[in-house]
Image (cartoon, rainbow, N blue to C red):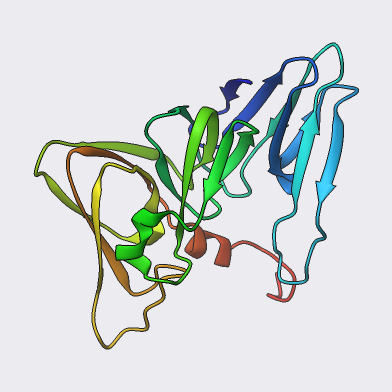
Length: 215
């Protein structure tokens, strides 16, 4: 799969160029259009809670393309996985993934962060191009050996698995959730890389018109 982006950084769109018979997975709601003949296989059913529905897009014998875009205004970013080093990506942060990239929410490296619970990030590994969706613009931060940074989980998009991380409460008086990152902060130590989005997806989504909010 090859990826071409346009309308970045404010309203990013990713065109996924597929070889003959090649397949890619993405949220069905993220699809803008496809070339004629691409087979769309929807997995699962939509829910009243707005849970995303995954779909597999398979190119016909002559190949094809799929255009996908995030629900919120922002950038799209392609993360190249080399089969050696994985990345930790915020849940809902990836836009499209080929079959050669896999997710592992129970990755052993999360035990020190989340214990036995499912946290707000999941581990991805394999070989290929992972398309990420940022809310707002995207900052890449490279940490040198021993360099430290603290990040609000709401603004975290991804970090390389080699980066050391520690989770702590903002205040004991605040509600805390490892599922969403609410009331928590992440401390990172280099060497490593981080991708930080410049807008809070939950806050932005809350201000968009939608059913039941009277707009």
